[in-house]
Image 1 (tube, rainbow, N blue to C red):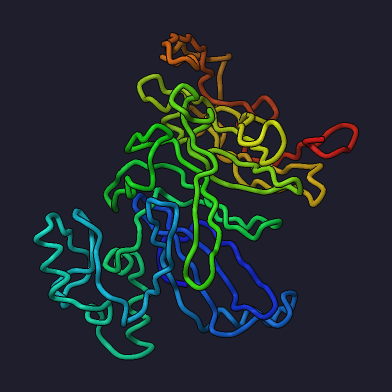
Image 2: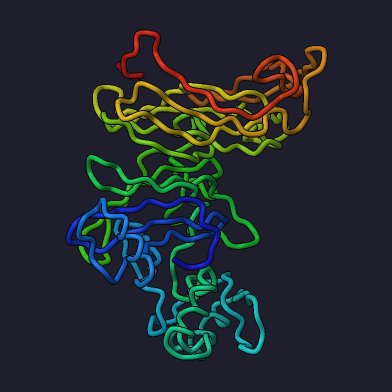
Length: 373
């Protein structure tokens, strides 16, 4: 499956097909990967399917700006084809470990001329060479021209369509790389774009797919849906998308950063059918200085489980109702500015009014019906 910053995994096991495993590398400029087993699934519920993980091929996703894409195998015979500079690749001095930064078109061209295939970058033969390549998956993917993405933090299969849903948390650049600006743009073409996306990826036969952004974060005046930094994702029986956000504690309610306007981390629902399809609705707001995770629905979508991580992470226990006045520059939906004064609690007393503690909550209707009924 490759060594990279595995953040999530989605597994498709269909009779008569290879095992499909999708996972993202949670770093700025990380890639989206797919593993295909050499063996074929006979019975999707057979525990012996775990043996299919032992042999297969790891692919990286290449996204085209026209909504198409392809899976490129990370194998020894894959051509070296780095994206335009700057990009980090396996060091050209093969006696050294680590990365080399190609900072100019000339450097990229020289690297491509020196190394024809990924196999030229890794010593050994057969399984030993492939193992070295896969241990170095992120840099090998850069060398092969796999698209750098925007911190893919969750991968979920839509049970109705079989499509892959991916949350990309933030499109800002970082030390590890920069998301491809031709793919990861704000709703009005802005780049870089911090507030994130939800992508739908539809397989189109062997190693081809189509993709589209089905939700984009950001303020509504800028074309966003009102949330920022999507993370965990779930799909209910109606096809609605449920999502929690991952705004860093230092950015939450921070009046010195643009992302501070989005407040606490929260849980959102996005219908995919009916008159409200494509709109985002805030369903739950987390305690102060926390992250909501572990989003899970019961099969009938009548109960929602949420884990509350590290409430009060920055200020600890809230003492004597401590709070601080902060001024935020918001935008009305017509783009006009609005100054908002917020009294922001410092720390947390969740869940019982004393020391803040992590926990798990379940949300349900009193009448027991589905949450969106």
